Length: 614
Image (cartoon, rainbow, N blue to C red; front, side, top):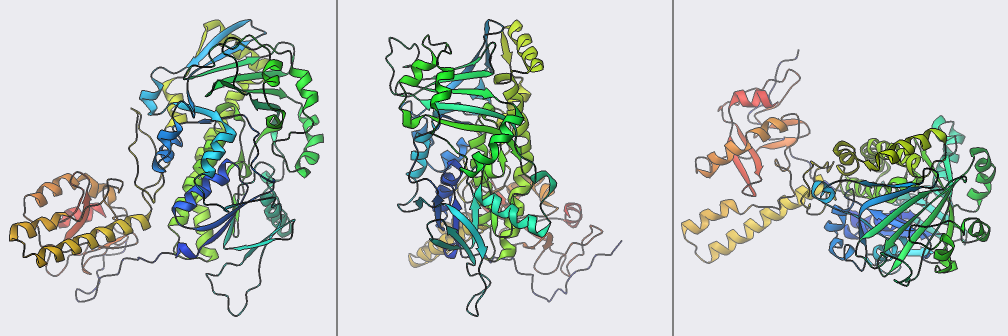
């Protein structure tokens, strides 16, 4: 066991690192203008980062079904200032319960959670997919999305003598021969991602593609979706209520299930799912991937005729809803699942369906894509340089933080798909037992699993965690953001002190300046203090706060921090044995953030506490 060593008392304290990348010089290419690409664009706008979104279609597509947003992402909409607009009854409807109808069983049951909003803080909100796209597009500056740009190649340019380590060196080529130069690429182009395929082709040539990434998708469903125009209230019950009626029907004697959800302005979002054999799907998969995947508007008539006579809980058939739906907004898409092992390579990173394709049964696909954006944006904000090593570190942090929660949500989606879509006997038996009870209930534990993960943007003021459960926000505020707040507080203090001195303020007025170094409550309890002693310091924060408030310690020196070691004015360091050396004058001080008074406070601590904390 090594003995503790301290720097010479006469030596200077180790400086606290404060070097950050110039985000204004950063250039990013995002491929794909789906939910993930547009949401990431909105976050990059807030960081004043230069970016462009390349979309292979020639314009915004009006296709797609219903979108479900929940407590896992709505706090970020609050941070962006658009949650209150989003939850208006003209924009979205809350979902209180799901009605299940099984034609084989001949009954109906409900899935509901008592006091759901009280427990998790937010309702599930549903709205048509194209309308959420328009909301996100409104957060971007004109020209950010370039349409008709089908990416065909991504490569790193040769470095010239004028190229520096922080120069953009990645070239993205499109089918129309346009090229874009950037620092790195974000693949947000869906389940059949061109960006991912280019990365995998490169890894295959290098012999480094993991075995898990060589296999195809599983659990395929073919889905037909659309949103009606305004429906006559006399013919369709409940369409003008200000909350969503969600009905899920499982067919008898056919491999189909279908769902209907009421949305604002007297409309219904509908979808029909057909479970297909894996062998049949494998035969079509290559052709579908060559076509670019996505939401097809061609070749839908055959499936429309196949499902036209399916009955709905509103009275009319699916065919009636289809007749009220503009043909250009009806689309057909394959829904599969697959968790890829490779989420990043070199200067390319994947988000959303390009990294993890989920079944839509739990309404978590788009939410997880947006959560990817939140965590990735936080990692980008903390970049220390604009070189490949910094990017790789940020991408690795992003994938490490996100993967465990993605795995959990994929398991939940698969479980829900068995209940809502599956025609296999073992799954039908589970539904039969549920229908015999008359209701399907979620335990509080199951509900918390779906709602407790609520990441927030670490470079903006945090919003309060609502609800009675303890949510996991995952990341503390970004290190760069904490540093910026501290600097702003110090500049404000200096400005006020100068103004007070110029005005010949009284000594009592000047004393107040000791408490104005305040910041927002989004900062963690210890501000920039980090390392193995953080928890112990937090436990004594309130006690130190009382001592400081009493006026006993006003002239003490701040604590300097480097890495995981604590340094007190150059006289103290930690070592492997966890003990601490004592400075020549025996004086220790600590600086911490007191959440109750919103002030940065300084107080002495004993030698025994230092040893225990380290």
